[in-house]
Image (cartoon, one colour):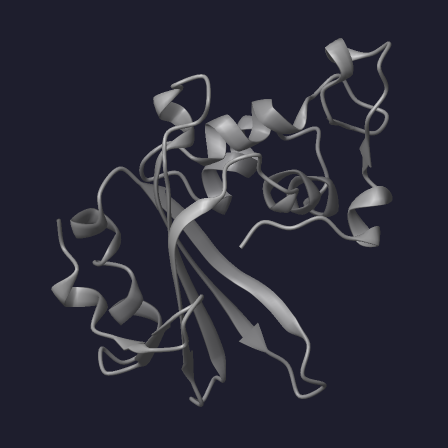
Length: 164
């Protein structure tokens, strides 16, 4: 899920005198929210983000899309598949943003590849408006019987039974 770390500090700046104090990608005229808003549109993945923002490096894009969101997920789930390849899966739902902007609402699916060092490397991610739409993705990247857990409680959850 989105987070803020020292890694983000390499690429993201916040300056009250620039972009009305919004976080932006260092050395560019792009704000984090501009990249995130495009990325969070239904069906948009890494390929589409790269095409929309060709002037940004892979590291800059990664920092922008993973930078801490002001919206706290209302539901979040984690699954793991030993593989091969060894992968972790993340699924979460964001409520509407405080401004009511529907571009910042919906479901997100992401998987990471677990490297031999134990580090996670982003594999793929996508936003959709509904859980039913997002659930078409997990079986493409791991078996349908991956055990999913509620990220807050640790309880096992059948994500396919959650369809609204």
